[in-house]
Length: 114
Length: 113
Image (cartoon, rainbow over all chains, first blue to last red; front, side):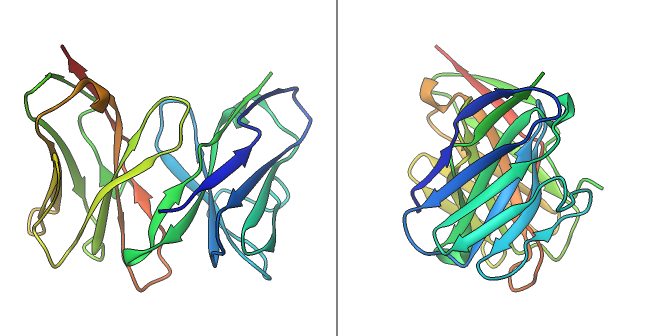
């Protein structure tokens, strides 16, 4: 498995502001993933972050709204920009490890936008 | 286009009995399937997986069955314990491609005393 930490664990933010979420992994990984889980819904992939290259965004997600950094093989950040109440979600990072590149998740960041 | 479906949003089972959680998929290219358990305010925890070359995988109280012809998988938990109460997500992926892990909508399991 993998030991993954996220900061902050939760936050309450005002509309129009931005929040940067950090994800730290216990060992080097090639790819890190950022997901969103909106209330009562499933997990939706936002983007895949490779070290040394631009993140790859899924349909419906854009870099201006969700800029991602991946400065090294154990760390990544996701910024939620110009927030609105619709951005209230749990944001999760994950990494691939082991057999068939199983994904392991961090504890999540619970965001509430007022 | 929901490629992975969990048609039961919730399930209630008595402690000691068997819990059966179901999952259907539509993409025949999926060849690796996973189950995750999620408690409130925590990230999903990997539970068990199965490759498409198998039809059963067992790990302690957890068994996953795969029926490729029906594009159906199920997670059996026996005996169920109160600590199993959580939301369970199935997920699927086509390995060896650039495809992403696709999640179902989840089933909330409540194990009652």
